[in-house]
Image (cartoon, rainbow over all chains, first blue to last red; front, side, top):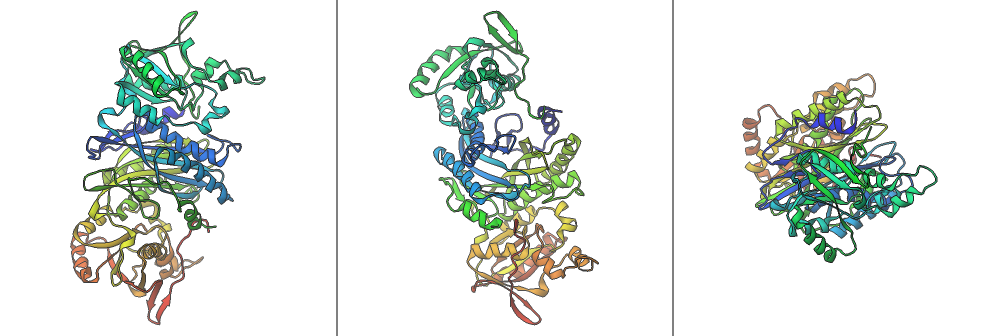
Length: 310
Length: 310
């Protein structure tokens, strides 16, 4: 049983109540607490030593990554983060100075994005460090971007460059909060998700939620320098396109808009965020499934991205 | 360095923002998100295999305990729980059926208290199970009970019976949500905390936050049957009073009211909650420190309750 199958079994009939707008199955849970014109966003995410980072990561990077992953999910719904709680599950014989440096990395990112660190707790997890962040944020009800709104004919956009994140970016990425809020405020974005499981995997989540398919243009997919370098590595070289499609933890935004908005969006983006690439990588189709068009034609894309536990 | 010292170092200068009313240092964080007349409560709590439960606990009990601990903290501020997220950090070769049974225990408690389980995630924690719950709740701004409001002369009350929780209650306690909400709605409660670290330890938290002291009446402290049985155990017998003062995880409410309200509160409580004992166990004093009065006189109480990591 892989992670997705287990989650499907656990989430098929969870307790709900009147405040629950959207539970398991989007980037954040969405709650209606009676906030005038706004929804509350609620998210939790954990990183585990040896799974999400190795001994080579600095404690500051571990803190940054843990908080950044939650912020990226708030961004995926065009939300504004409010406050986070930190659960530090500490191994035997942990070094208090190491834990303080984790907090330093985490606090620096929190300050940059205006998030309060509202507390948390420390527990013992004898064999390894686990850092879990929970976060609340808010979003205007009519600007809350979901995975399920993609429409046939939509243009499919991605920020930044993809692949090879494990060579460094996964520890120092900047969550796309300002970019997502700007998109929601200035365009009618139909659907959005952040890239954590890899382009192909996360696009599948978006397509499933939207009951649509997509066609990716092989040559348009923005490939990171890290992915290109990786392809030339003497051991375990990987084709850069495969890295861009399959590698996890890009923490970029993937979203769709009506095709008639695509050119205007690209133009305004370049003025607003001149340092961050935005690329149209394909379109949403009525027919289900994910297809890749390259010089030789149209191919069905069977990769599922990174599936945990598999 | 024990848990309290580490937490003091980590929390002495955390990022804040305009939404933060109270961060680290109370039962829940308190946020002002613009909810008319209400605050948002935000809490996280984790249980770890071998630390908070053993192999003898059923999976349903583990789920119940994890969620119940968070609910008890929402109760301590007289809040109403809205939604929870579940982080299941699963060991290698976990049994999916075991995880489903954890959720069954957790869901049953959530349903009883009207909490939505709004999602969460599964991660790998190779050596042991760790279950972290994050929760949001709400409370009327003028009914939010804090640790820091105790006044000299206040009567000190505790619900239920104390001590010996590890012999069973820590796995099947019922969080005192209805009781706390009723107290806040019907009386001017000055301060409240839930008992997780033991009566003496949690009372010290309340006294520190309130800048007061307290005098406990030895003979008034309600001692559980489990604590009495434990005292007769052939190995490691413990005096029942010591168990009631020092054992953790009672998950009862400890609160203070003006002494003039004490008799009326006891009378109304008996009618409202005839099955749950409520006991006046002492009073708040202007002089600092925690003292215990017994037949032989007044003694300073130096025990600190259960301190993690110590």
